[in-house]
Amino acid sequence: MAKYIIIEDEQLAYNELKRMMMTVRPDWELCGWASSVEQAIILIKSTAADLLLVDIRLSDGDSFEIFDRIKTSVPVIFTTAYDEFALKAFKINSIDYLLKPIEETDLEAALQKYESLRAITPESDSYAQFRNYYLSPNLKNRFLVQCGDIYQHIETRDVAFFYSEEKYNYLHTFSGRRYIIDYTIDRLETILDPTRFFRVSRGCIVNIDSIKKVSKYFTGRLKLEVYPDCPTDITVPRNRVKEFFNWMDGVK
Image (cartoon, rainbow, N blue to C red):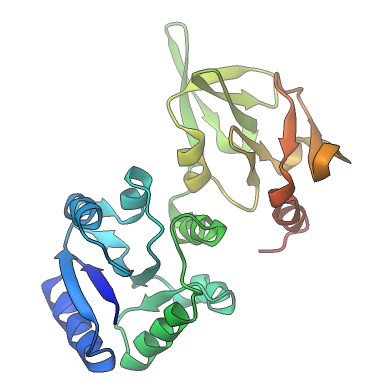
């Protein structure tokens, strides 16, 4: 028997999902329901659940905010009304999501994936990829920056890379200018076009057009030379090398 939480802001959708769960897994225990990001955070923190059934669009934001604010390794099955064609690749990779209106057979298949320990978790690389694709219609195309008393905008296509240094985050343009920005590297990863920008490390995201040279480095890592020069060394950790090469090769 497993314990699960439903996070859904529509009463009718919640009732129907609860009904289907009672049909396909009658021995499982529903241990909570939340209809907003704030309620979900409180519920997840206070409840020892084995599985989360999460609607992406909630009354006070999207559910990805939940996992920005709390750390959890509890597996997640997402529900969404998003375009099936934009998400079909994730079916191949066993990413668990259910398209609304949810069919009982689809719910059963997702639960079987969970029981086979292939459900997505907020700590996995697949979660970050899923999030990027889901939010892709809202990709950021420009940034407001300040230089002294002057404000201006920078088109995202003109950004060579983003990086962190000490306590600041910087936007660095192809023209060689850099600006302090309020966005964290974590946040930038979710709003940039994943076909053009790649997070090579904890503190750096590069534009593919900025990469001049990729070389093997110590302990299985890669070292990047970019244009213009970055004030800090840019290396790709060993556990991200395969994903980095796939990105360079245009493989999703």
